[in-house]
Image (cartoon, rainbow, N blue to C red; front, side, top):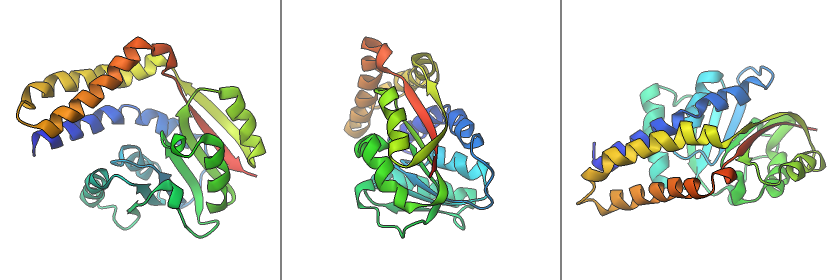
Length: 223
């Protein structure tokens, strides 16, 4: 395993600390036998693998990051889940699934690419009648987002907030530890150094404006 791969693997472990909230959101849904799930913006599949543990569903996981998807494919193969999980390299703005294909659409930290309202409206056609949409997004304009849920054709089942303490303790602190451990190993690896620096900037921005680091998980049912 290269030093870059070691950092990526460590970053996945950091990200996995937030899977407790994936589990919390999923438990707010009614039980569905073998649900068809679309994960939009899956990255390397950390939360998607958690979904696979929580149900016996068939999961399509979509992202544009070829390297992340390759790592995800390796996880799927290692876990023996190829019969019910597959990745798809495609932009979320180019989704062309048949209408009413999925029982659940899941999106953790990706809907901002298209915008909260546009995502809710555009993705509704891919949901079966009474299907569910779970979106984890920044908390900004929370009251406006809550109003848009109804106007976009959904009923709000529930929502919960991850505050700045959660993001600091569960994400930033362990990520900083990983960075500090790996930085001495990147002197001759410019790709790893660039990745470490990018993650360090993320933590540094948090320190400057911690009050902006909140996120909200919305659990919705298509009307």
